[in-house]
Amino acid sequence: MLEREIAARLAEIVGEENLAADGDASSVGRWRLAAGSPSVGTPRPPGYPAGSAPRAHPQRAEAVVRPRSAEEVVQVVALARDRGIAITVRGRGTGLGGGAVPAKGGIVVSTENLVGPPEIHADDLYVVVGAGMVTRDVRQAVERAGLFYPVDPTSEASSTVGGNVGEGASGLRSLKYGSTRNYVLGLEVVTGDAKLLRLGAKTVKNVAGYDLTRLMVGSEGTLGIVTSVTLRVLPLPPDEVMLVLALPEARTAAEAAARIMGSGRSPSLLEVADRESLSGIAGDPWSGTGARLVVGFDGPRSRCDSEASKVRDLMKSEFGVVPVAEARRPDSERLLEGRRAILAGLLGRPQGVAGLADLRMQPARLGAMIGRASEIGAASGARFAVWGHAGQGVLHLAVVADEAAREAVARDRAALAEAAVACGELGGVCRQWLVGEPGGAAAGSTREPAEGPARGSAGTLAGRLALGESGLDLLRGIKRVIDPKGIMNPGKLDYDI
Image (tube, rainbow, N blue to C red; front, side, top):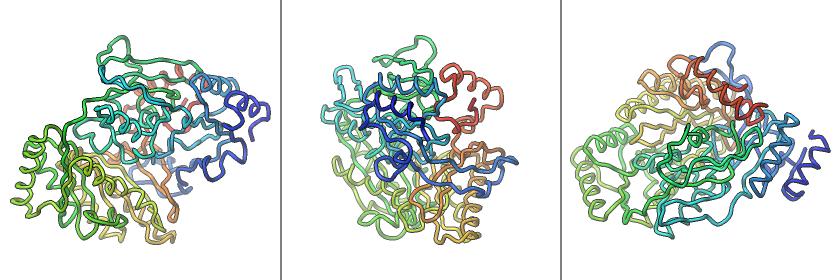
């Protein structure tokens, strides 16, 4: 329970209407903090070192505050620093990796009040937004000014820009345009030592000193709290065309995607989804049998038409299929809503999912990985749903829970772990390893570092980079300088101090 004196001081800083403390801080509704509930004692994926069984994260905060300015954030962090209280920053909590879950309790700092009209500078191609602004709102605001912000995570309707920065989010169009990291020009950030830093510049080229701006991108709130972001934007492409193709199975769809990339085409997006992943989505072109491949092109109308025509010819001659749907902007954006809804549809099932792995590999090996997953599922009885960014070799693999019996859960998670190992054998990595309780609406995370073929699973930064002990020492040193008391999102990374 939070000390009364500290609660009173927080109320002074942010206003009583922007504070929830003690029992109210973990209630349902606005203050619901759970991103899922991983179970204690779940089986380790093969390759996990001894003694590193997945651990459950406590989900109860002692207080939630909603600062209205960067100055209020500074005061909240200074109070937490002086009292040694853990801080977890939260946007909308859409990240499956559990970064917004308060693993050590303490104070959750919600950025939802850090919003306001975006400052759009059309001539200089940048926009300044509050960290709490929803990603889709940013995109739509700049589009009205004839500009384009291409970072479009599938959660764009609810995820915040600050959360995107913390997670280093990518999106459907990252095949052509890259991820959040490529568009952050500057940041206003409050460090764990309660210092307000203004990093970067409002210019594309900025090489003075170490790149502290990029250091913050993807740091998952372990170094500081982003309060404002300066984003690079682009001229809005004059046209966009989207094709949806139906193929017999996901492996064939992945092979078709590899063929498109190998033919010299340059799509803006290239997405694959199997029938299981789309089973909760109603309406054309998503309903029916088989898998779906979505191909998008943007740019001058003549180029879009030429590229789309070549893809149609290629798919008909080599795979015997033609598009089941085609659309141009703005209908192309509505066409993508089915793709964006996949994860929510899976998690919304009565039994939910037993686990989810985020696999990365060479795009040409995606079909082979889907084939291996199919074999593992057939041998074990587990049901896999697969979908992902085919052009980049990113595959999301969920094991669909049919029943909550303990033996079924153990079987499903063992099958998912086997698939993660298979990814390593194909030269890829498992970036995140997530487990959830069947019947729950979301997955929680296990974030232990993995060894062997599954190296890089669990979503820890060190696991993703496979730095080794010398690299970990360097990261610990950086964190000590920026967050000397170790209060920022503790318990999340394997180089916590």
